[in-house]
Length: 43
Image 1 (cartoon, helix red, strand yellow):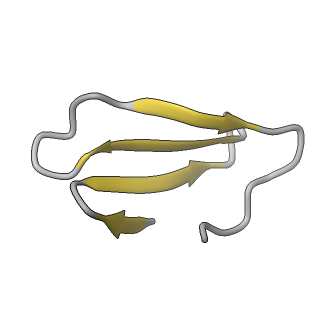
Image 2 (cartoon, rainbow, N blue to C red; image 1 turned 90 degrees about the vertical axis):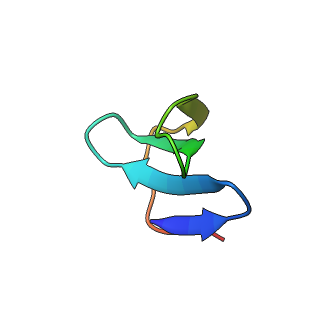
């Protein structure tokens, strides 16, 4: 998990996605990337 500006970023190994959401409300959840491999880190 990472925080940048007004967003939380995290990877979901079950869905194999990198996602983000508003850090204040948890709303506006967005899928940034779907992969065939397990996402390991955020940069």
